[in-house]
Length: 260
Image (cartoon, rainbow, N blue to C red):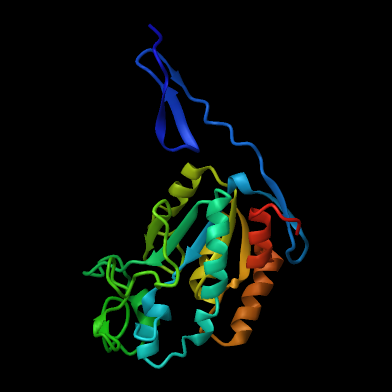
């Protein structure tokens, strides 16, 4: 009787084959899927078989008219501009086999892992109006994990196989399993979208670059409520020191197999 080998791993990208008698440590070979994208400062060729799409902070408290930012007088319309490009990009990315990783604020109810310095960013007067505090038009704790406030906006419905990571800093890599998850997916290239471009998107992208990932910012799938010069500086830095920028249309065409 043959001692059949069975797959053992967290996903089909990162699995051994094992039996009672032996273990085969070779991961499954994934055929390369090269695609050339229009990008700045120059076109890039990537392997879509080793790429993922990271979407940052597309949450009600940042984007919904009844969310926290709108409730404290911030005009969220500029940030909402990236919803439509992302909604168009996500199906193409999934169809091409790119893992979609949602990286969102998920504040603990007791805020035990938030420092005074981080709380000060959103509550500089100490009035109790920032992360985890019940405020805004719904008087709900800001960005609290598993709440409506922290939920992804309804225009961007996650798929069942998408991956979710709660973060507690401007960067999605600090104090989270994001790096372990991405390495388990065996990806090299990360495409980034979300809000705010100059804050959590930029700092997550920068840390990804420092960790050795190839980083590409999808510029129209990224937005901010900050002044426009902040967005322009982010695009400049993404192209100058962290990698490249492309568009949702260019990435979608690459995922669908069309020429750039």
